[in-house]
Image (cartoon, rainbow, N blue to C red; front, side, top):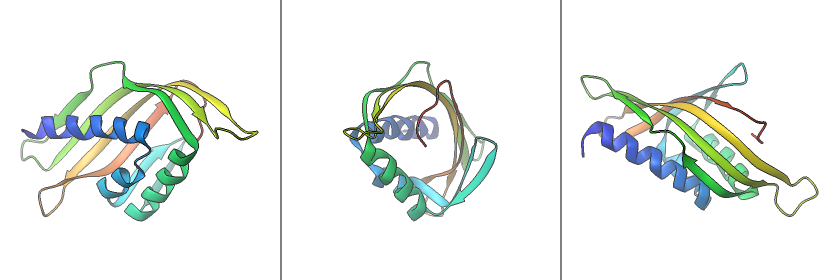
Length: 138
């Protein structure tokens, strides 16, 4: 599997991890630190903090749809050490299910996920920048 295919595979696995509530996938994929750009802010987190954020979010979410609505775009540097995936994903479901704060999820997310290869040659998620069409819980 070439580097572009590896990044596409990680992207597809991240969609599945959302649906399956697999917060460990995001913890294990994260570089140390991982940077996130969203809502006018730059956040830095350790893999453990990333895992906890996803654990908290995914434990409250139930997705009926979490899928690409456009073919993801992938780029890998000539030396194979850096890459990114740009995605556009449709998300439907509920958040805070079974509570008085339950809300419907019905939105489209677009993001760029930036990857670097670690010393062992494994891809790590080094940064993300995202936007969405509708308000969705963080």
